[in-house]
View 1: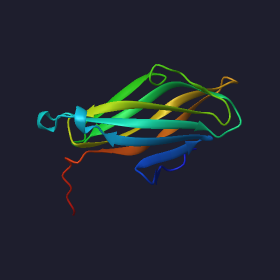
View 2: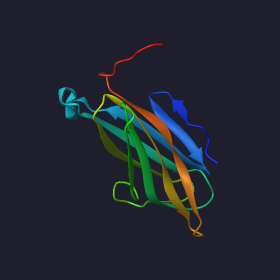
View 3: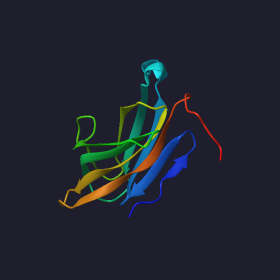
View 4: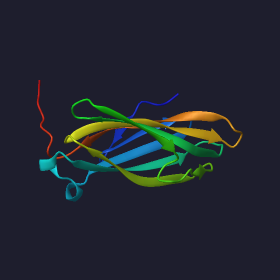
Length: 141
């Protein structure tokens, strides 16, 4: 069972499922964005840490990316950034990827499909995290 996502200092989010801790730190890329053309580019760095006692391999990913108007895109594929890393107990894997949005804010959430050395598949939650640019319009109710 996955723990509820927890926001850490510095704008990162973390969740742990079956002793696999996933921490995500998103950031807005102003130099690559074009707000006047409704193009907002975000990067996110993910650290996956095996805090368990068994070796695991990341087989696939599944993301749900929702923009500021509620439109959702799903992305599925093998591994991450072209790799299917194997993590022995105590090992970690870190990568950076990106997501373009047509709105100044959005939300990402997803999961990794993992496999133990014994061949048992399981799913690891990627915590939901906000994609926020300085172009967001905030309203209070």
